Amino acid sequence: MRQRRFFTPEFRAEAVRQALASERPLSEVARELGLRADQLRHWKQQLKRAGAVAPPAGEPPEQELQRRRREVAVLRQERDFLKKAAAFFANASR
Image (tube, rainbow, N blue to C red):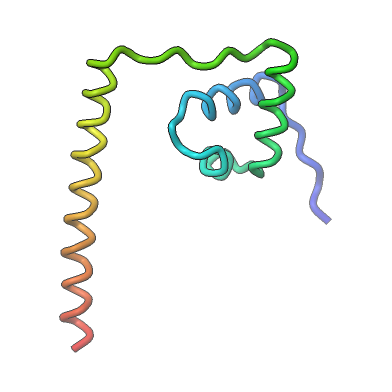
């Protein structure tokens, strides 16, 4: 039987802040933090009811554009790498 894990209020608040600030799904953020998605969702609801969490402020359009361009560059590199790896393994299996 697994031992019950306890999380500090600071950890909970930081986990919720990360989930709100991220554009990724809540389940993905929870998985990265080693939590269940429903657990993170519950913390989020608790903190919102308590008024301790404000929705993240939107970033300026120029900053968002720069961030998205960096993301696109990284995704292109990852795609190109995966294409090369797939071609390598396809040739190796012949």
